[in-house]
Amino acid sequence: MSTSDGRPTGVTHAGRVLHAGLHLLDRQIVEQGTGRMAGKVDDVELALDEDVPVVRALLTGPAGWGPRLPGLLGRLVTSVHHRLHPAEDPQPVAIDMTHVVDIDSAVHVDDQDLGDQGLGEWLDQHFIGRIPGAGDATE
Amino acid sequence: MKKYLAVTLGILTAIGGFVDIGDLVTNALVGARFGMRLAWVVVVGVLGIIVFAEMSGRIAAVSGRATFDLVRERLGPRAALVGLVGSFLVTGLTLTAELGGVSLAVELAFGINYLLVIPWVMVLAWLVVWRVKFNTMETGFGLLGLFLVVFVVALVAAAPDWSALGAQVSTPRPPPSEDWPTYAYYAIALFGAAMTPYEVFFFSSGGVEEHWSAKDLTLSKLNVFLGFPLGGTLSLSIAAVAAVTFLPRGIQVDNLGQTVLPVAVYLGKVGLALVLIGVFAATFGATLETLLSCGYSVAQYFGWQWGKMVRPRQDARFHTVLIAVLVVGAMTLLTTVDPVKVTEYSVVFSAVALPLTYLPILIVANDPDYLGRRTNGPFANLLGVSYLVLILVASLAAVPLMIWTKAGQ
Image (tube, rainbow over all chains, first blue to last red):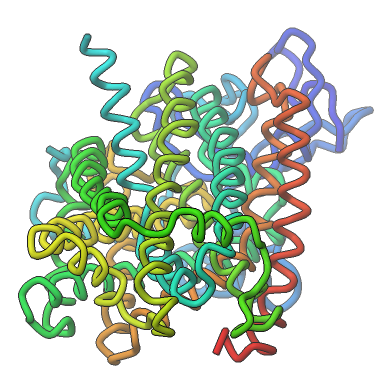
């Protein structure tokens, strides 16, 4: 799965060659600026129409993670997510490689709405957010 | 001046924070049954935790990535999930044991049945992780835990036959009353108590919480190289004082009251009061550490936002895990299961869960992508690899030995 740099042409990274399996998969995604942790690179989407396969997008969320788990467990995760997700055919959250700013010990992406936070948002609205002091910094 | 104060504070915190319910119970139990004949295991265990805590602290400071981040990164989603489930269960079990320890310390001090205390400890622990700043929490309980130094004082006051204790240290084999499998079983328990996986989860995640950078490496190393051995000395003195008090009389230790009894015998009421404060602080501090470690490991596997550095609303999933784990731990104790038994099992299962935690740390500690020029030197690698072999042996032997010896009976 080694690609030349792992990004589409036009975005240069000083010619670094990255091993998608080693440098991208399962790495922490961090939002540039806010420093928010925004999930793991659960899978990658490859563009196979070029000479060498190029990583087109990073996929994150249960729909990306589930299929990578073996057998029954993988199917369970995928089908539970499918069931709970409001969309008809839920897709993993895709972050286009043009949004990737830097890759070091984490994958930094520029501020973009990573879309459906799913579980986190639900828990915030229905549980954690309702407890007094949930919006305050610690003292 | 201020800087030295911070360094001293860090080291003192590391000493006070090193000992938890697993160390308190296992060391006293082993001291009473084997004397100091297993002391070498504590030394081996402390060196092991130093080796891996230093690596995980260095990785956290330089790259900003905590331990379970690396586990997922290097082992992939499947093996890391096995590691997550294993270490989560063990850390949850340890949390349960620590909660029991806090409640038993309160029972010993005030005579209130520990079952009545558990819900309050649960609420108090939650309030601390909900509201109190990481640094305040860490320093406060670490410093109070230093009261456990009374174990050293009690040992000196007991005026033991030092040469006899020394002779036990230098005879690493079971006494006539015990057999080899039991000896090996308790060796693994002591090893597991010293190297519990939550210590590196907490140490590295704590580094990220406190925004360590490469500048803080010296502080991190001082904490590890001074704080942990001194904490290990506390563990050894707990074993020694139990050896002096119980071994000649053939008394076995099976509750927390017996762990602190020698202090009362040699130092009277004041000593007892101090040791109970120490036990309370050490186990309560460890309650918070194990609790947060459960949240850290799950959140880091999934890449969720975690930590006390943001408001709870911003890491709702992390805080939900904390609440769920705390409630399940407290409810487990309320079934009247013996907290000391829970502790004994937790340290042995710790040994089982160790390899999947420590292997990725060793791999990443050699990766210049993460560490630049601060990767492991040959000495750290030699120690790391030797310890991995040892960890693997202990991990494989733990359950068979547990069955063979009927959990050390």
